[in-house]
Image (tube, rainbow, N blue to C red; front, top):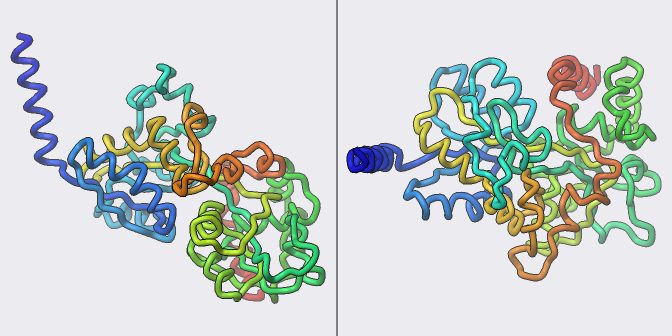
Length: 358
């Protein structure tokens, strides 16, 4: 009986290896993709023999939603934001994930206890915490340099163009922070007509000085090209430009907008078994810690934190550059997917009308 069981197990393993030799992972491109290739994909392929095909998108939820709508799923694993993961799970479009199936921490702590609060959703598992932050070109300011969210909106004291994302989620909160609203009251304000008016009034003050961006690589490029003197963008992208490429940029952590990225598997994925194996591998303790060697995003597991050390250059301590650093969390606004599920449509409509000058 034991021989039969071993033989059956071996045959199942052979069948899996024969039928699932690749997995298609849709992510955000750029330095973030590089970190995933080095920390997740290469060791995963080395361990399993399964090839990982990386597909870049400005926002992976966009092709995911399109594939679901067309009933033609070509991606296996999508790296998406929390609000999209919750919404698509509620719609029945994603595979449910049992936390008991995920690897425990090295000391045996179950995954359900090891992941940071909110990092495990019914249909998705977080890999990183990241922040939308302000960065500026240090060569553009003589004497005093900007240091707060309010300074971003002060074009008299700190003249020059600003780069902002063309969406309400990462602009309205910053306007309120800059206008003196405490971080823990931002959503309360934005849930009222008066608070929304306040945010747009603040944005009005710099509207003529804004260059709008839509893809994650753009704010770094805008700064590098001198088209703007300050821009908001993803902290890991700015870190890569500063430390990896030696750009004269500096980050302002005041009022950072914190979010998580999550791995999700759509129902109907072409390689579902390989997709689940990849998700489990990429979110274990060591892999999440390894990613921090390549980009300044905080791992979603508690047990990974103590394993985070130096950048790939072998000399830069990563802890001071993490969005989860306690100093950087003091005025941070954490994404609230429930708020955006309720208000995204109306605020996007208002934002687009404002952009158009209506």
